[in-house]
Image 1 (cartoon, rainbow, N blue to C red):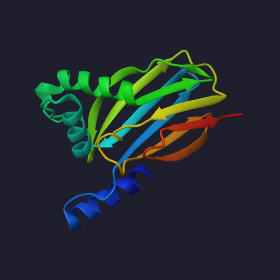
Image 2: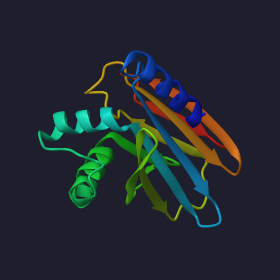
Image 3: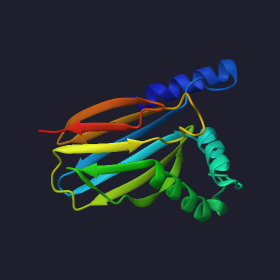
Image 4: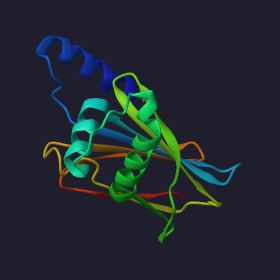
Length: 164
């Protein structure tokens, strides 16, 4: 699915000069063996940089290698405020692992430790809602091979997944 939206983006960028969708894709996977949640969040690079510039009123260049330490602080600060997770009714701490460029997007990685089981996963996601009224958040939640997905249209920012 991730590759499909990237194909649409690339095709429309070349045809029209800008992309028609404003999208973040967050994947939350429970690794039962490691007892962790592995979280990735992908956002179009240009939108993310523009949104961060507006929010922080600072020079933002997520692709410049020498700026990566300071950009990591900003990326983490922003996402900690706009992406929150609760497992079985209890908020969890997202440990920032870093970010990297993948195709036309920036992917940020997080980990949550000591997650033995999931019956209910609650997600708050309003990534770039303040920047783009048409922003969409796609969330995939995976536990024990069961994959559940939802789409949040700005201003909707909450999703819940129930696992047996």
